[in-house]
Length: 390
Ligand SMILES: [Zn+2]
Image 1 (cartoon, rainbow, N blue to C red):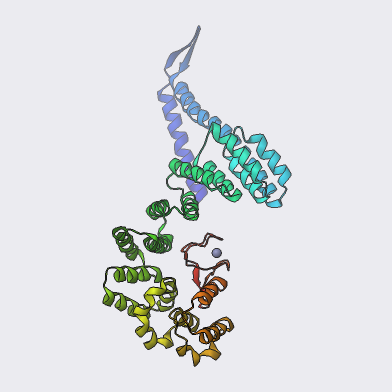
Image 2: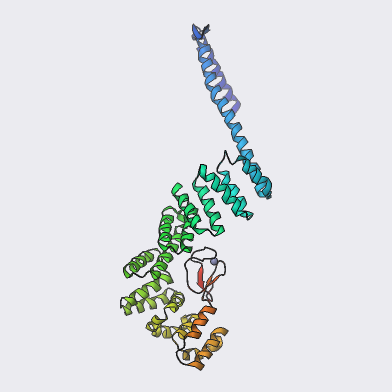
């Protein structure tokens, strides 16, 4: 069937050419420089037609050659990379880096993976003097960060996002390092930028990070107006123990004890009571406001946190009946506290130092105080109370 159609098409094409040629046999004069030809018109028309096909064909033939050459080159790089033959790969990349700047990123990656950070920095520093780009700056920022040169890393990452605002990896590293440097305003600004460009699938996670980051900043802020503003924004993103605790503390400061107690009680409804109490342990002087609720809802509080709260309040009596269920180090505390009886907080403070309450669920690092980002593995919202895992 197909052959028949092809035959029909070819036949009609042949008939068309034959008729066209027959009707256009008049000779026309064609001049090229001093030469002059007389050709039938149909020859000129078909000649132009063939040339029209020939030129792009030749063009694409050479373009294809260039492309397959490039593909072979990248295939070679990939083979060397996956085989792990670092020496050959480095040589090959070095040879082509002058014409293909972007290869410096790959080269720096190879250096980074084999621990040759300084060589990677050297290459990228040289390349960026001629021509820089968002990924060269990002790669360099990563290397400086690996080397512990945080300020240099920050400069590169700021360049990286100025070249391409949508480089989310650069934004993320910029955010994490800003946090490590204790620069909360820049951390927040960067997180705002991340939220502008993040893909739908990750928007929730980044929003949660924004929620805890703003709450953390609110807790660290001294100006009450600014604290309120940060907290309000934080609550728009998520509800977490951190911003509930910040709300409680803010209300206490404003003399609204009832609202604070109400918020504290509410934390039991959404299962955040352990986190809230653990955070409030850093504000011991505020704990008495919540003593009644704590006593009333004892059974719903993690035993270790409950014990710490009672010890912070210098109340050993309610712990007596629970002593067998308590972890060893708290039992010791209860006994020491009982024998001293006077309001000596030194033991309690020593305990806080020796037994951190927080742990990063991602890398296992322990922290004395809550922090929204793990300063060891740079993961966000991965820190939880040590004994309330999973
Ligand atoms: Zn960690």
